[in-house]
Length: 479
Image (cartoon, rainbow, N blue to C red; front, top):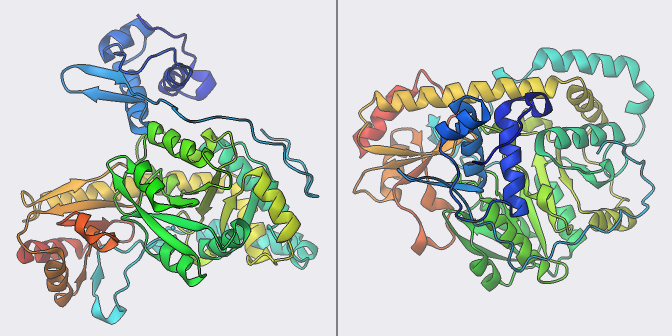
């Protein structure tokens, strides 16, 4: 019988320790592909823990793609073969004149493009409720910054952003995303759209970029506006497909592996290794990992970032505070591999940082004093409760029996599949005439021939809950 000596003091809970032990044995090959794991009851009895502990560990491993379940047969080790992947250590970070660090899409998120006057209620908009912003704490910290940091506030920020904020973000990434990065690798900017333009200059305008299909179509618009060749690759149930990516002729691929927009797919570990193998096939290939709403995995542990398993410096990590705080703060950041970071400081450090010093220093203290973590925990509970409320209202409406909810316990939206003979455009036009905006998943496909039908995006981040029952009745009436 498989066994471990569990110590809850190491990782905070027995289930976390068990999850890490199993994950480590799978990655090392001690547990082989398709090998059967003990039943939850037998494993729990052998370890001296509750069945819930084992179940939580198994569920987390399933969500990351290390384990799969077969109904009435049990749990098995997934095949995470790294065939074709050569893992080499990153080259040391070049001396770029930055201090050493001793510790080991948001404003860009898709929103409704309907004119405000034409829509009384938008059910698909990724908006943030202003009532959830921590105004009291933010005002207190801003007052402290204004009274203590007059000289720093008036000093021009370095091109990459102020050191205190980059250090705070590095510590946050280590504790929350298991990413060991140096502040030197972090580049701040006013929104991810601005960072995309910096990145395009850094990587080269002659490269071909690939986006997911379906995906966030604004990305292709940004790249094409810069005169960059942009292709797309198809997806399956595990995320972007490597054969389609290879056929696209891309040098750079832009993906959302933790919680894909708009499908909600979480890319399993096996597919992530396949993508890393693709990136390692040729020099100057990179993966842009867009982690736009990773903070809001509503159940279980956060899914590890793809950057955390990249040993060859091929993953460029991007995130934003627009989804976690508010789009109006306009603070986003990217984590560059060491070689690219060194190139940035050599060739592009003349750019001025586009984020206000006032906001940078306030956010740095907000993170350092633990207020950001408290806010994330509070919002995660809020969104989990809000999602459950929305699902309950759907179950109590006339839509019950005429719809199916597709979700991944993450983010701030899910897919609502509607049973209807109407095509997507006919239904959305009908709802628009009634004052409702509901976006179809098919709108986000470049290749319309492969588009899913009757799947719609329902975002619950900023819904008017009092008006939602009426909106659901209108949808039911339109079917």
